[in-house]
Length: 115
Image (tube, rainbow, N blue to C red; front, side, top):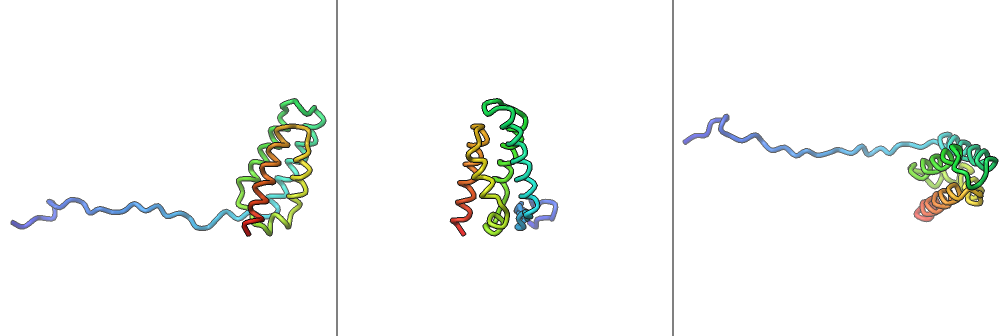
């Protein structure tokens, strides 16, 4: 008994997700903009009081979180003033800014140590 083509099940195909191998390229200008946003917001938050949850403190913390999530290279970290600014922010009086900047510093130290 011959099978007709209509009797055959559909051919199985593998759904392979192809990941884009290109990582997003981060330019030093992007990092410098985030640095300036974070420091400006930290200065304004300092003037409003250390233990006040201000929009500026939240903006500074969000900029720091964006820095931590970026694929930064050791060359980019050393080329910009990122470490110096983060060390300055790590001594900030606002606990949220201080905590987040210490977290980003530890992350960047790990990136530098792995290279």
